[in-house]
Image 1: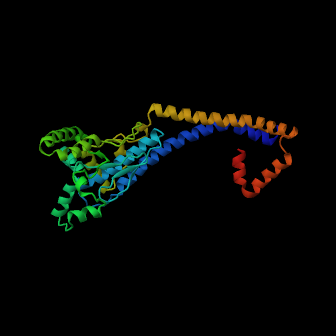
Image 2: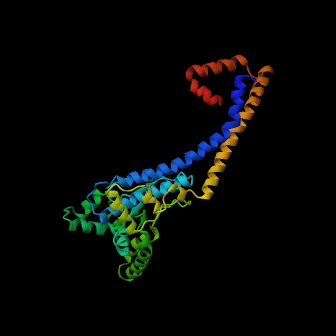
Image 3: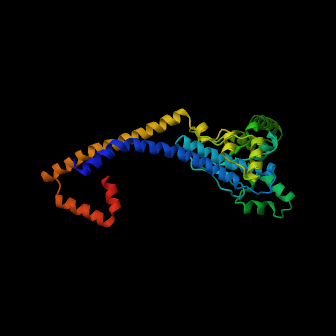
Length: 317
C-alpha cells in the first residue's frame, strides 16, 4: 500500500466520527453563542439612569427576540427576530424573517397594557396636543404617512402587529378587552374593531407558528432584569434562573435529532470516500472506450487549477 493509499483509507476510516463530533460541538456552541448575545444585549443598558419601571419595556424587547432566536437554534429553525430600535410612528418593536411584527407594552396593570395596545390614532393625536403639539390633525397625520382622515382615525396605532404584554397580565387583559367590546357595541360601535383586533393579536410571547417561541416574561421579571442590566450584572446564572441555559434548553429529542443529522452527514462522507475509487474506475473506463478524451480532461483539469486551485479542489471533492 502506498503512502497515498494509507492516508486515504485512514481518512475514510476516521473522518465520519470526527465530523459527527464536530457537528455536535458546533450545535452546542451556537446555542451558547445565542445565549451570550442575549446577555450582551441586556448588559448594554449598563449605567442607564432610566428607572427600572420604565426600562423594563426595552428589556422585554431584547428578551423576547433573544430567547426566540435561542429557541430557533435549539430547534434547528431558520426563523429569526430582530430588535430594530426604530422610533418611527407605529413602528414595530421586534421584526422577523417570517413575516410577523411585534409590539410590546409592559405597563403596571393588565388593563393599562391592553389599553395601550388598543390605542387609536386619534387618541395618539389628542396626547400629542396635550403635550404641547401645534400641528393640526391633518398635519399630524400627513407627517406620519396617513392621508385618508375619515377612515383611519379609529384604527389602532399598531394594527397588523402581534401585541405582546407581560405573561401574568394576559388573562386579565383578555377579560378587559372582551368587556370593552361589549360596552362599545352599544355606545360607540365605531370603536369595537380596534378592541377586537387587539384581542385577536394579543399574546405573551413571540411564535413563528411552527413550534419556535420566545420565553414569556412577567412584569416583575422584566423589572428585575432591568435592575440587573443597569448594573451590568446579567450573566449565565441570571438567565438560568429563568430556564435559559444549554442544559435546560437542549432536550433529549434535540440531541437525538442532531445526532441523527451528524450521523447522516458522517455516513454520507464515508460513502463518498468509499465510492470515489469506483468513480475513478468509471472515468478510466470511459476514457479507454473513447467516451471521454483524456487530453481534454487533462486540459480542463490543469486549466481549472491555473484559474483557481481551490475551486478545482473543491469541485473534485
